[in-house]
Length: 309
Image (cartoon, rainbow, N blue to C red; front, side, top):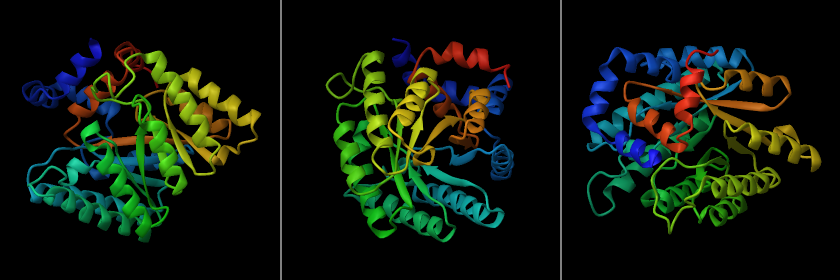
């Protein structure tokens, strides 16, 4: 019930407008969003890099309705890629297809636009010696996202990957499909409301599927991202890697900016790779609400961590 509530709230335009303007909203965004500008995001990246942590930068935004908006969003990413190359940051970028025009127009115009824009981004990333992660959105976009990732990876091998969500029944087959092509996967639990015929409804089943997929990916030889704050799952990954002789460089743990910085530092000290997902920009509200929807227990978790370093 709470999950459905937060997903519904993520699409509430009135509450979004109020929250993004309100002082408390700005306070929340300051803790969990790395500022409103590229410069602030770069500063956060440099601080994390200095602590031995890699970064994935995300310029917040989605579901644009005009070509000009998609092009403006892409321009922000091209600036980020230039900054990564110039400053030699240990960072890559994450992008949503709906932010790049996926839903614009008819007769395939939107998907073609998004693929052209993201393709230019991947080409730039290759020149900057970095990587583009195509974020996964709701199930209406799953297959199109996978196919676009496959096409772009064929053109720029190793420079583009995507995200798979453990709560979907189809994800095990999707993981095998991508791993056969050497495509890097970021594994998360899932943050959208999906029907019972497409997704596991119970948390225990999602967690079990996550662990199964995580172990398969870590042993595949294809570098992967284990995106979780769940200490039980992290400990399971530690034990699995040790028991099967999997090098710590075969995978990395991925976490969200502003959450469990203590755990991030601990994993780095143990020699594990850690990458922090660093969102920035004024359109933080949908992102924040989906993080709460991802696991309603995060409401208490975020409240407790609000005052922690």
